[in-house]
Length: 121
Image (cartoon, rainbow, N blue to C red; front, side, top):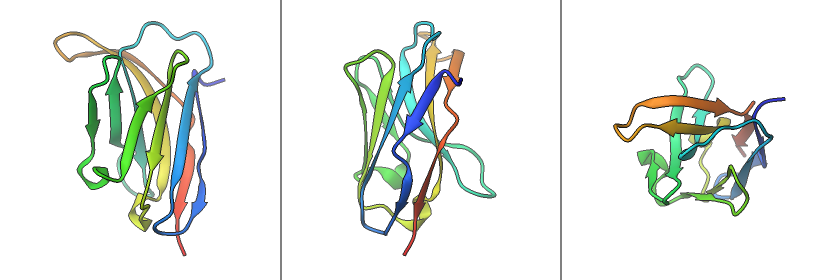
């Protein structure tokens, strides 16, 4: 089983909302950042949003004001609230949990298997 498990993807119409959830399944060492990435057909994997343990967030420009990333009360959980979805948001969304050094270098990370989000009429 993947160390992270995503849920909440699906098919929605433009303008609608979805919320993605991600939870650790065990065996995860200390992490300080969780986030969401996505990959559309024929495109590279790219960051959607991330959040650190102390609540600092980072968003891809095209989702600012529409998506909100948040941490859950349970250990190693993260959510992505997606509002006003657009066809361009169609992609496989992956959850990531990572540990970065204080200099910003990635030490290790964990990934989920992905969940499909399709925005279409």
